[in-house]
Length: 219
Image 1 (cartoon, rainbow, N blue to C red):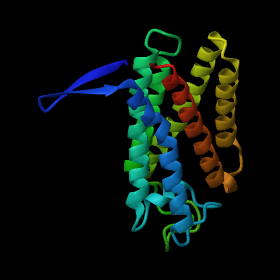
Image 2: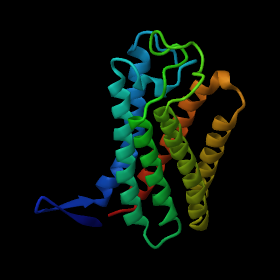
Image 3: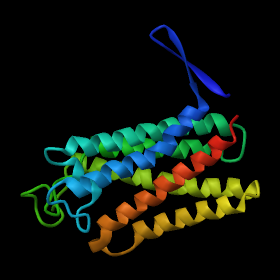
Image 4: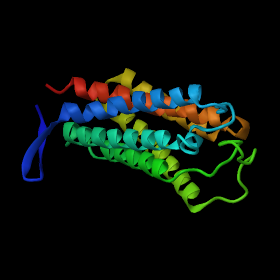
């Protein structure tokens, strides 16, 4: 089993590659379950008009902040596992690097929260804010990094799978990239919250599935 050694507090610890990849596999389910639980239980939240990012505001906002950060850290662990498992092969450099940027983007989006808007939390403006705070801008940058990097990663892995004649995986990766682009670029602001949620399902689903595939080839 491939592993790495990391000294910490004078103790040598080994983290197996399969364990690191399990982080990427778990990132999507963790994010989805925690977000869905909040959508269903936080009184007054309406996903049809309020993006998931707004869950980071209000009395229980720390839950969604932690959700972003933990999912990002799990993705970073998965990126490290990918780098180790795929080193020296097609997509072995850029694939893990892009997944790492995805993880960083999630952490940034979690730490830097959006401004109150769309009626959330209670008392917030009913529409979009007229001006953005610095942390709202940072949140947007983090979200764009996450969505953009993993979309490109889909294309990088599509080429890898095509070269290895895994045409099903290549097609799956290409379709996920196209869906992510369409979902994000669709010119309808009224559906942005739903589209962001759908886009999250697509990109997290792709990451989990590909990580399972990579992990299955490690003894």
